[in-house]
Structures are given as C-alpha cells and as structure tokens.
Image (cartoon, rainbow, N blue to C red; front, side):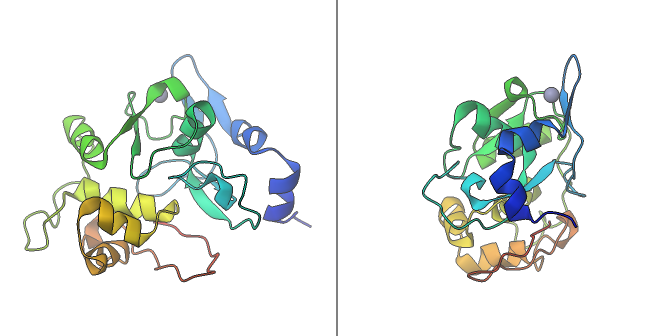
Length: 195
Ligand SMILES: [Zn+2]
C-alpha cells in the first residue's frame, strides 16, 4: 500500500524528498518530478508549512497538502520566506530549473516584464479586450500564486483589483486562453489544485 502523504511528510524531511527529484547538470539543476502542464514549473505535493508566500511555519500543526512550485520551495530552502506577493524568477529562463543561484526574487510586474523580454510571455489573448487591466503574464502569476496557497483576497489587495476580478481570472472566466480554470477553494478544501 502506498503510504499516505501525511506519513511521507512526517517521516521524510522535505529537503530529502525534494532533492531526490532533482538531476544536477553543470548548469541547471533539473526538476524530474511532476510539472505543471502549462508553465512547466516543477511541483511537489507538500504540507501547508511550505506554502509559497510566508515560508515554512513551525506553528502550523495540521498539514494541508498542496502542490507547491518546486522553484519556490528551492528558493525558500536556500533563503527563507518569500515576501508576500513576490515571484521567484529564473535567470536561466528554464522553468524546470531549481538551482538556487539561478533564481531571484521579483515583483509580479518585474516577472511579467522579464518573461516578455525573454519571449516567454504566454501571448496576448485577452490583452486587447475590455477586461485588460492586467497582462497575460500577470494573470498567469495570479493563478500560480493562488495554486501555491496565496488567497484571492491577498491577490486582490496586491493587484488593486476587486475580489471578483481575481476570482474570474482564477476560475478561467477571464484569461481562459492562458490555462485553467482551477477550482475556487473553500475553507477546509484540501483537494489538489492544478492550473
Ligand atoms: Zn537554471
């Protein structure tokens, strides 16, 4: 029988689970575990202590499992908590890379501009319509951030948008073409969230 996620979390340190899924090359360190289908970021399914924005929280007793972006985990293990709302970006432009010195912090705006500069912007669907307060990269960031545990309320504050606008991005009503929809989480909902 496959051991439960909780058993794995309690018996195998996260660092060990994480690095067992990484293949180091002379340049990038490549995530060999699961990846998101649209962004190609690696993901690791782990407890809420490692949720993106606030870093590991020893006070969280109850483990709620989420798919967390591998490059964000790697940055946290090397540097500590990710400031709320910040993106972890790649110097190497390789979404599967989790090498800490290839990663840097950026604001959503910097991340979106970095993507555009590197030609990795998800394209322009939606940017020309009346809902276009955001770039597609920012919309994708919102889905990533939500899937890694940042609440829609926090995201609404961060982007200065109405909560309903954030929810429409998350559930795919707006920006359908960048991927999704992902389900809106309810309190106590521990289902996996994919984007
Ligand atoms: Zn790299």
